[in-house]
Image (cartoon, rainbow, N blue to C red; front, side):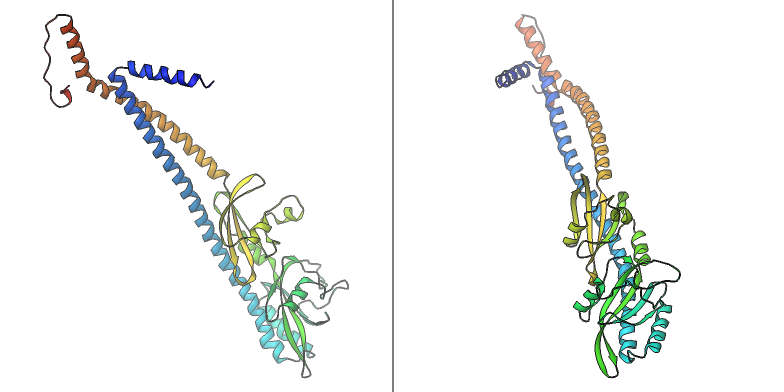
Length: 358
């Protein structure tokens, strides 16, 4: 097999040496032009691909920033409700004065009922101090054993946001089971001059967060989801399918990453992932854009480029053939004149100038 290459190279060199100057000039010009076009085309294609991905990443960052502003405003509103209850009501009311506490908290609830599901205050042992609009705990309810309760106790003067869950603390005469995100914090309750620890729970409507995220639109059929610091999904357009185990998401890896734009392959699919942290919550907005459409566009551009290259090569070969023929004509005439002189015929040789100097 290796012996074939030197023999083939020798044959090609021999054919090249037997070519006319007309053909040598034509092929040389065409080869140089084609190589230049290939190099330029590859450079432009790579630059186009990189620029397209940069534009996608920038578009995703803008969308995530807008969603982040919406979430920040919504969460700050809920934090403001929590601060108002704590600093304007609980600190100035006796915890045993449950009637007045409930009335004032209920007034605040009515002002924000579009975003709130329920508000409740618990003692350290899990007993209910007051709640609105529902105030009857279910028999199986276990506030102390809930994650939001324990996290509130472990974070003094700090907020804790839970993942979405069904409100299952209070009995609802309308048999509603709304999805909520619980905002809990540790508070100090005063009873007859004695201060004790308690927990304030503000259940936010998950629909508000869901609507903010759902309105976001990414390019090329992309989508957006929201995870907490542990990789638990807060919002996903296919959330029910994920909970049912029918669809998977690379949420754990997204939660471990810092803000930025990444390329990844998940379940055999190439995609661009953009991550943005939602301020003080530690939640992460994750924008996912499949690269399938980009690859398809790139293949179409490649086919178009190859077609254009073949047409250009054909056109260049034709033009080079004509131009090289014009350049080589004086040499061919000189060759013919010399042959005639060698044969003993009289002939006239032009004394040309410029491109005819040969």
